[in-house]
Image (cartoon, rainbow, N blue to C red; front, side, top):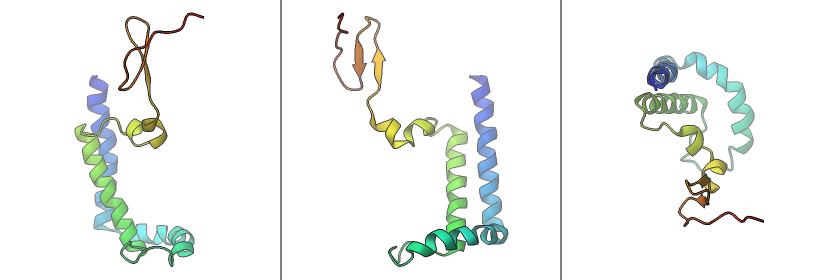
Length: 117
């Protein structure tokens, strides 16, 4: 428990500081991201709605803002189950739990007994 209280803010600080640094000085990140954005977004630029940004500067700044926001939330423990809840396949499938009596339950279902065959 103590390790999580220390490790979570330390890990979050990397994302927050990196995001803030990118927002303050985006030029090197824009230059680094330019080839990738041209390669990926350039192929679908005509299919993307106009309100969605496709220029490299906006995408880099958007990425930095997401890093700051997610880092702050992670550091404060407001979204601690991110690996589980951010993965759609993991969050959509029912999880079975063993109850004290040995029956198997899925989320939201009534207990059912295990078959003894």
